[in-house]
Length: 184
Image 1 (cartoon, one colour):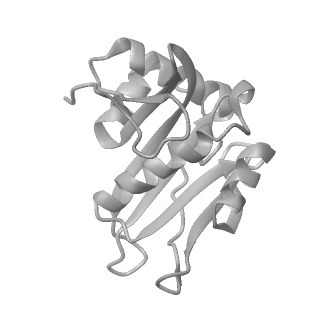
Image 2 (tube, rainbow, N blue to C red; image 1 turned 120 degrees about the vertical axis):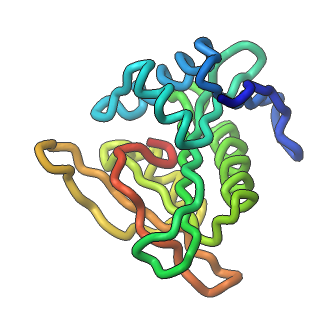
């Protein structure tokens, strides 16, 4: 169980307030679910689904004052098919009425920082292909497309992206297929 906390993002360009989602904070869980389900309808989740996800991942919601703006997911680093690299997934979602105002960049930067703090040396994301804003956001923030696919038994197209790491001269590992993504 995590304790919900509200923090102002250091270096923020706005009055965006970020709140960590805990499995006991019903309001934050519901706000995260609302944003997720609006932006990623093919992967809509119940409150119990979100509660389970909050036990595995770092979920946050973003507010401008008391107004819900977006949410994020950071899947902690995991090894896997990429040797010993610690690969994390960073997903930022912003409600349509708040896009192109810098909020997505703040939410994403916070998620990226958290992933790095957790030991990630490679970052990935996945975006619903129909989410043109989400794909454009990911590409503008240094992600490169790796793969497009449809999950078994479904018809929606997803895009895996990797963050190009120009400092280390490497490219991030491949994304998992959960159906959510940066801006998705």
